Image 1 (cartoon, chains in turn purple, red):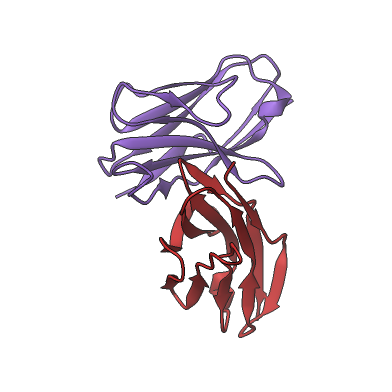
Image 2 (cartoon, each protein chain N blue to C red):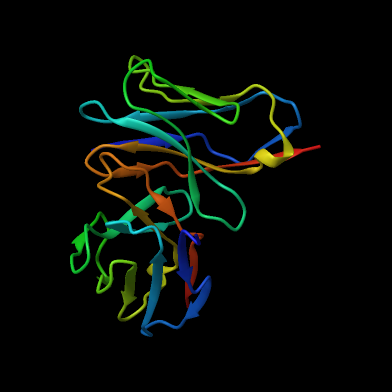
Length: 114
Length: 109
């Protein structure tokens, strides 16, 4: 099992460009999450999904969109990148909700917006 | 709101030294508490957890005790190894997960 994988691992964008980060899991998990990690701060939840075709906002959703068209994939989109979105992005998945089940994390994507 | 405050790093120790990484929390209700570890180039992995006051989580020689009176969940290991070099995250589960900032540990031979 590959677990949770993220593509790409690194990316540099110019302000205003768009991109999509891909998260894939092969554990048949229902729940998937996107977090961002910034220096001096903990991981913060951007968006999450409780199943195929569903999405919900987390703590810091502004400037991001997500889609969960297939159970195994969770996409994070930046329509018009800003320097404030420079961060490390982590995807995670879990069998059930965070009140009961462990989250499994991907290795992260380091994004720089210039 | 809920939050986790974690000891600043980086921490550098010699092999076989004693490790403590401090973690305190603020929460309403009775949260579950976790320690995650991130090895270089990998995602976060659950290291240990405790779901109620006075519970002790343990794994791979690491321990942490849920102290409600001091709102703490400090991570300890009696004798660290080079392979323990990683970033450690304290986390709290309330209505969602709240993570600390991470503490980088380097163990030198």
